[in-house]
Length: 62
Image (cartoon, rainbow, N blue to C red; front, side, top):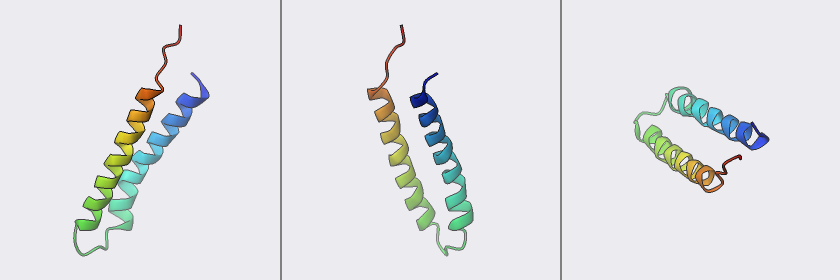
């Protein structure tokens, strides 16, 4: 497995950790849930764009 693979794995581990830390630790004192939902909308957009970039760069090793 190449360096690009481990770069993408570390990126998605970072997104996964961020998905739990921001809404449940950083935004826990927010009086409404609007901040968490805004974060999750932005998080989903970043995750979808990341997956799209991976699919565009996908190459079969022969």
